[in-house]
Image 1 (cartoon, rainbow, N blue to C red):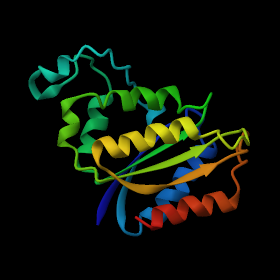
Image 2: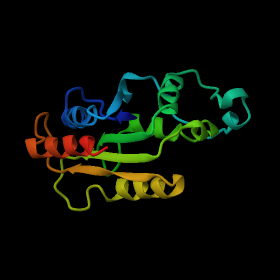
Image 3: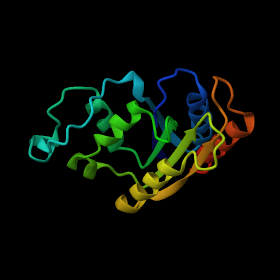
Image 4: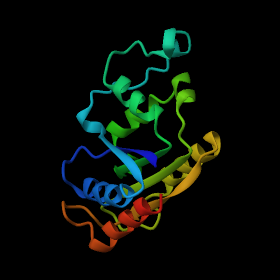
Amino acid sequence: MGKIVVLAGSPRKNGNTDRLVEAFAKGAEKNNKVDVIPVSDHNVKPCTGCNSCFEREGNKCFQHDDMTEIYEKLKDADTLIIASPVYFYGISAQLKAVIDRFHTPMRNKFHIKKLGLILVGAAELPELFDAVITQYRLILNFFKLEDAGMVLVRGAKEKGDVRSEDLNKAFKLGKSI
């Protein structure tokens, strides 16, 4: 049985991203332990780029916040799913703060082998997710991770706009892991 950590990046509770994450988790729970981390519920300060974590005992950040808890959950995960609404062609600020804090040697203690992506945006533009997907692929290559898959949903602005077919795609992605 695998362990999946989902970083749920929406600050809007019970919105479209949360619904997709819930569907994903239902599919994934059949063969995995799934831990959903709603990042907006955690106080995570942005990385300052000081690199003191490279020198400090246990590679700990000088900032005292909830990132310590998130690191602990990531240590045992073999799959990481990034889920976010798309604002101005990027992931949410709350999620970006968490991901930027992966700039630490502590990430070398993670056992993550697969990375997946769930994105939802209000616009219908074909290029809506291009910037995030480019970053995603760069991360896959840099860390030599397996692509677990993507669920990309356009045209979902208001709560509940995500369609049952989109929820089914998220469920199937979860089930495939």
